[in-house]
Length: 382
Image (cartoon, rainbow, N blue to C red; front, side, top):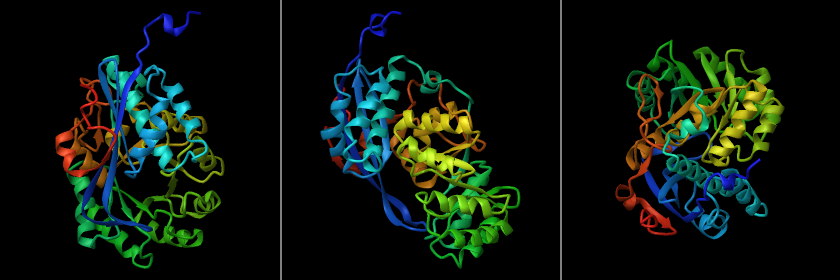
């Protein structure tokens, strides 16, 4: 068999730069375990063959230094088309740092940029390169922060149903468990009886507290309980899943950074639906690995946050149920990316006329949010 290098010339990566942008929220936000007033986006640009691919993660600005000093050497000078080899080099490079957390998000941003660049060099949309399983991705509206008043909660959830056509919406719980049944009842009144209602505790509860809450939430036909306990507690999740009402799916996986993390959740079994986040789990490569695990175990997959980043890969995932239409990320992606998807009839679709992931970063619009960079964004491809 001929070596691949005899079939085409290699296209080495000639430059890689990273930059971080801290974007204030439009109002104070909180969930069951955390409060915040800004979100940081870390952008990676990879250049090869006269084209630029982009990837990003929602993480911390310290990732810029990690990418520059630790991970860039795994990519620079190597053939851009050999994405799995890049991914494996990066995984080995962070072995002694720990493959989870910051390291995983940095790897994710680079991997997404490489996939985008490969598709651009082939002049095709990324979904065509990956192999489409569907034409569009169903959405669930997500926000409903515990810092919101009941009126603001109702307004936001109803808007996803009425304006965007979402079939489901999700709200945060867990900050004040005793008040949550009233908040869930208010949410149900706002969205009507036919829309799906999800809740997310972000690991705020004990297993027995979560079971008690689940049965109260079932009175309002809540169909999904996300991270009722910490996703690190696979036994606790399994206990909640076993004792939750039969109408309610238990979901977790947004903090899955490695394939083993997903394997542990599925093996217990701890979840009815597995979540995966391409901005955390090793990029498009890691997301597709999680999708393969779900396919092998006949478990639905849900894409967590970053809808513009996930769109093409979500179209390719065989058992995908839906994509999270998260308030913060939808807002940021619409502000800073040309080509960010727009919800229509409760779904988003890739623009097949645009190569790669179909996104272009608006450097001038983002400049006021810049907090860290390795090189002047947009200049390294000149």
